Image 1 (cartoon, rainbow, N blue to C red):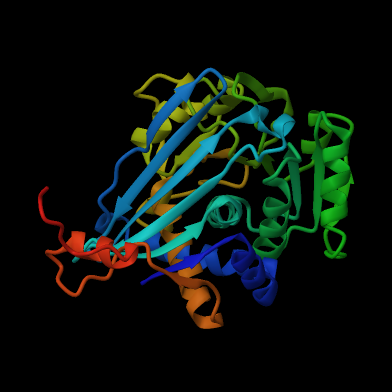
Image 2 (image 1 turned 180 degrees about the vertical axis):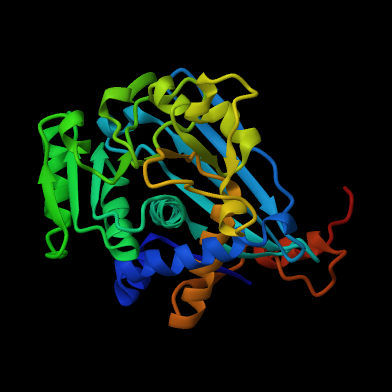
Length: 349
């Protein structure tokens, strides 16, 4: 039988553990898997693009587990009462191919993205960072704010969105975090002024310049998570040229990330090498660093692994018959007949 965690089960699990600790636990799992980077069989995601969105499959495996995620990105979905991003995924045993775990990944992807952002910032931002500037208050924003507050000790988040209701939504959802000071700003420039770390998390599938060079201060760490497919950017190219850039999986980021604006030979650095301490991260307090994050399948592997572990520990989820159990593995037809109540065979007329 396959263990299945749906949206209500994931919600109960998070409520039992706590949002902050759930993100922190996922961050620890992500970092542990990044330190095993070379053990994974990796490839860029398979994407099917349209004028209004994208549908993707994201596979990865190590010697024990194969993982995949199905995910979409449709910015106009909110007008239809649907999330911009929806996802589910699975873990399978490499030895047999048996799907051992299936889970919702819409909520989990938000936790995963926030966890990865915090892992990167721990390695790249100045250690005394206290102020987060955030442009975009959509579905990802609360998770980002809580991750940086819980894991990095961010005390103030300055926020801007062209939709004032989105800002109020964020403030309302963060009301249970009294030590995190949420400050609405009147513009993107005001939101990042004086910030140690900046997160850009906008949704429009467009060539955009959410962050321009005049908005960037020495020593700033930029967490760019909204530009995640061809033709979708957030940073002015000169912001990238002035910064030391870090990526998850370079072959994918060259196509999907903000660095799609730069020549293919423009230098970038692997986040996993910084975490493994084989390459330098930030080289000075004044250096500008950019994490050009597009989301990579190995992070979903980590997220699935963490959710499965927590579900087993707390007794959440159910067992489902995703694959038939066969007394005779060579007789699949017999299993069908036993379910339908029909005879196992029928004489020819």
